[in-house]
Image 1 (cartoon, rainbow, N blue to C red):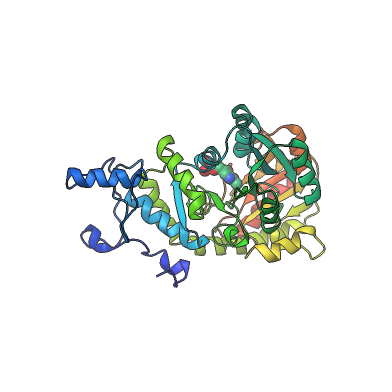
Image 2: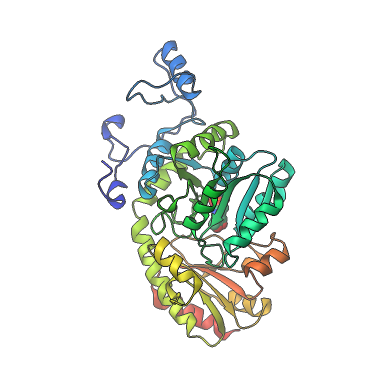
Length: 412
Ligand code: PLP
């Protein structure tokens, strides 16, 4: 019953206690393989899994082997479709596994991939350094580039655009990209029946505060390591979207073996029960932190969606596309790398570590850490400069966070 709200559905959607001796919670199905009741059943399950036959009305694909399907992943995937109102979802062993498997499923030699910048450093590396070796041409654009310039850059390349991948808000700058405008661009670039797919990395706001499919995207990608997991104790990823866009990714996942493990699936189901509580509190704390930083003399610029003013070019996109400002705050210290490092080294409670979205607050220096592998020109163009610090705000008491930040800024 998808009429209930996601917060309610996270308690039991997709699981029936009678499957497991009445257990309230789904057990961890820690098994590599599943026993068939008969050889004919095994044959039928494989035929369905390989698309050799069409399912009868109401027939579900049977359980075969945990690289293809496992109850913990299937229940979790059903729950992930709820937040984004998606047809289908897939869970992966990491966010990078979700992104790489999706790109390999949909791109072929000769294709063009249009991508936003900045991107998380790992994604940037796959797109700029690995995909060209497989004959895929990346075309980059930044948030302030007019769409007409993006189209001109695509015309200059001269090959068919196959996919658009954006990160919005962008890691680490919180730059926003207009999903609807890019979906229209994809429509204009259709070749016959074949329209380029629009994929959105929704790690920073999703799945609570941004639903890219509702704005015309075909696929939504997540590092589930972040808010979905939420406790900095696992690595996972997800891809959700329309049935047509997800199906090739599911096939590629089966053959690459990039799925998540049953225990990871189980932990993510537990985490989803408190997603809204964590994200709401994190966002309230982030607002307090952003206000504090904005008024501090040693802070040059704060990049937080909750501080956008109507005259900011991102404001209109924010109002139309996002349901909340999230809990990622980036800021430029007054100075450069030395000043940023002095600040980071002086923090006492907030840990100096990469990653984000967990219950605890973390701080890092994107230019030399998460985005270290991005070429200098791209870093400069997209605002990943030496003075930029990224904070992921947790669920602690906000006064303690602000006291820690104030003390660390004194050291700058
Ligand atoms: N996408 C974004 C926006 C990220 O921040 C990250 C990791 O930091 C990833 C993808 C990759 O996710 P994972 O580390 O789970 O592979």
